Length: 189
Image 1: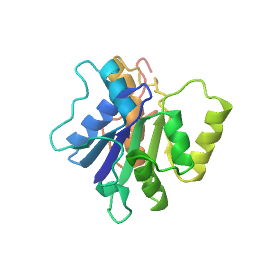
Image 2: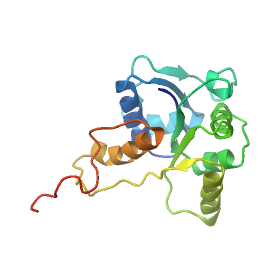
Image 3: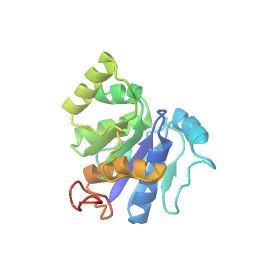
């Protein structure tokens, strides 16, 4: 499958790294695009920076429309913005398209392709809530970075993976090792 993976300036670079690793391990074609602020967050949150697996097409800058995913004529299976700042989510919901990330998101929406937005913000203001609704109304899939704990994760990576597995689900990528609710009895039952 072919995917665009973008990141903006919200905290949560671990989600980006874990999703990038999963998609690369699955043999998918991945086009990676980071905003200027995403690069700052990655530098602050990921010791050693973002590990970009071999075969990933990394696009530099967020101001060029000379990328294949900025046109509806190029076939891609899905796009995820992980993490997605609330400002980016608002601009996507309102179709401003002034950057490469925003234009690509606009293309995925107009072509009715999967667009997954992963905001990591708390608490939401009324403005955020209205923009989340607007994003849903135009066809985006909003998967807030809200981890699950029912399978008792033991590491930060396992906690992050609970969100990554949900993103993979919505991109149509099977994650066979993803814990599922009530598939196995809890310890002591």
